[in-house]
Image 1 (tube, one colour):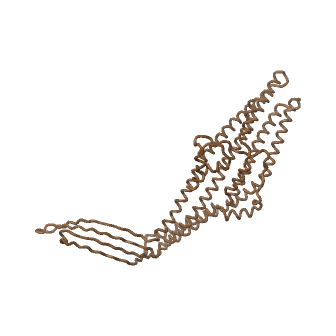
Image 2 (cartoon, rainbow, N blue to C red):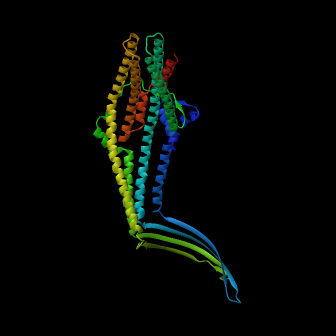
Length: 453
């Protein structure tokens, strides 16, 4: 496969059993080399393209050769008894289609199917890009969610210890300890869940690439989302999607192929004209033909006209069947076109709204952090209760997770919009990869260090 050679050097350098450090672009190259879905799409394309070759072959000359050796024993009345003879024969027969409308229509259908296979593979490559980015971003979200969960757990533990000490000196009621303990237990459960989710996200990435991957790159804290200039007009994007989306193009060609199949089915009513020729030579010897033998040679050439008269209604049935199949393909095309229109508009609105959402989520984290810090200070001076701190701590954790999710959702939606419009290529992935400049696991390490203190 061509794609396998593209990543050959990378695959040779990597141990299949060891986790490898890689950025988004490198993970994509691994997926191109190891993803079974893309390999299946490539094989399907090759399979579909052979149909055109076979359809063309039926219109080319057909030659067949044969050889036979026959022994014949003939019994006669007495006193002759019996006689034996042997015959050998060699022949070459050839035919050439002069007119067969069904074969012509079938060739046209197979050409459309072959073109559709190219667009289907292009769509599969686009799908691999978005599947790779989704799996990659899930890991990044999982890492930061686990870091937030561990930070939240450390803060809950600190709050529980503080409430317990205040109870010992008579400065807090037992209810504060119970509330702090409940929050700490919940925080521990959240950490366990986040850790398990992260393991699954890593495994999903391994399923895609065929080998474990670590050392991913993440967005820096100062990153802010922007909408590319080419995504300024939604109607233009929809027009581009209708004309350039490879999946829709493939479906349109399937409609054309189905229309040609209707023509091929109707050709069952039409006559066919075939040019045929043969050459043969043989010899016969034995008791029945005397000792000299016979060596006949024959040549023939001619036209054969075949006119269908009655086939028991099978031809009409095949026409109706082909018409139904054409209607199925047309309805599928129309449904896919409408869905593409809707999905493109939704992806555009999601990308545009994503800028505001990311900023709102960031401010929510800032506000939640300020509220949490203030409640801790208020608890120390007696103006806030443990319940206030617990609620603010829970709000901060949720805001941090939502903020992380919004950042990577924006990047993923950018790729989905490009995929819908038929403009997605490796350059989009390279652009996003340049944004990922921070060691993703450093934040997790910092959270681990905080938990150990």
